[in-house]
Length: 228
Image (cartoon, rainbow, N blue to C red; front, side, top):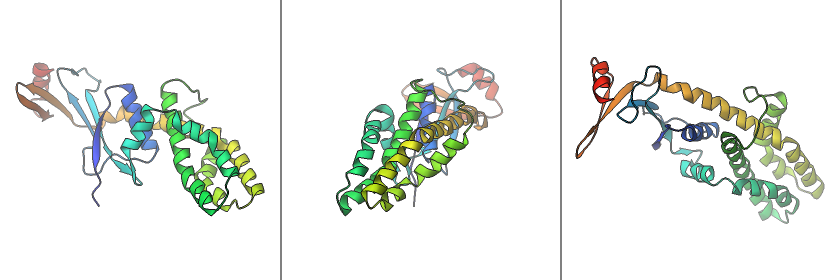
């Protein structure tokens, strides 16, 4: 099966953060592409040790989820937390097999979309995570529990077990969100250095013609001096 991809620019911190968030959620840099490119131009002139216009080639789907869905939540990040806040009530008010199945099916989306919101808000400095470069045991355990929480809901067949499930969810929710954010931070750090592995190129603008992109070659320094 052929997998599509899209190129996403990283000329701003927000774009780098979006790529890191997508990778954290399981998206990958696309196979059969350069994965990352680094292009200098009149707009992104060459400076020793500094990137040009860095772009990543990101797969358009992960586990059937389109990247557009992730981008929509990234832009408007209020809804998922409202859904998360209401989720324990959905568990407690399960009325029949159909609603039970709906709640089980809905959990992973609510959980991962909420994690995306926390990554976004961390990037905006709206949430604080202590020791962001180290995953603690409590956070690791919380991630393991909530990764399998849909099964916990599925097994909750009476009111007592549903109440216990809600307590388990409340206990592990914040540590799990901290764990997601820390994975996001690690991916951001890796991305910010990845441009150094990409072959450099030069983009030359031409009147009434598409730009000409020339990869690094024998006369690269001369071309840099002339066109950037």
